[in-house]
Image 1 (cartoon, rainbow, N blue to C red):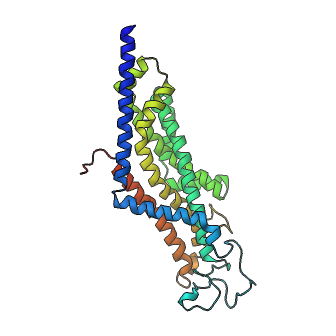
Image 2 (cartoon, rainbow, N blue to C red):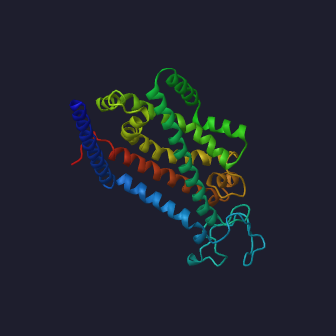
Image 3 (cartoon, rainbow, N blue to C red):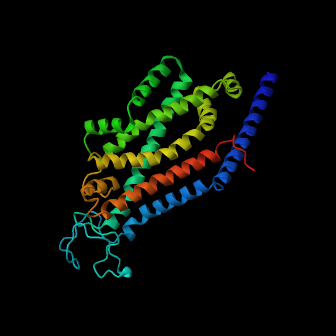
Length: 317
């Protein structure tokens, strides 16, 4: 009895030491993140995009979905009107980025498009991480036929190119932004399932997990207290990189007419509507394209910076 109590006390002390060590590692990783130029630039870009999305109703000069035919002050040619800034000598109605082919303000649509893209990217990856991690941990910890059943389904999903699979799912469900979100989410789940399963397989036979199991801890406690905290790092990095890919996939689906539907303000849809005017009215494709590029670049830079900051093998002085 006394030896059992001593063993429990030793295990408790080790858990406290592990917790303090894990906390210090996260603090050090956070500091390293702010020493990484790529991460700083990525955080700046993402912070700016979030600010744009939050302030879009205040900053936007017009309703992004309302054509301006017959609006007060609108004169001359409306569809495809080029950018107009009075401070640069333009004496027409204020349209910083011009009008699209339906006489809607391009500047306002770009601002509201940030909301759509960030919403799709963040929700898609959040759901994919939750579902994929749950499936991966279940497969890795249970093993046997459960592992085989789950991972064979994941293998089938991974056998298809992600965008092609998303197109197939949305085609079956019908076009629309929410269906596009669901289709993209399904294509991302296998990535996080494989990541979490690999972490579980490497951790579940470790000594601290074996000791917990010997002291009577159940599978749920072991997973929550030990396995999940030690496997979260690669999932966070992959999730950050995945948001940029999800934004790009959502824009591609909208470009093909399977995602956002008119008159929604979405960057891929804006590119699709102006794809035949690349040479005659290039501003209609330039600004949405630049917005997509900057968004994907921001998340990729942050993901690369997080991968470097959270990698304990790197030598930092």
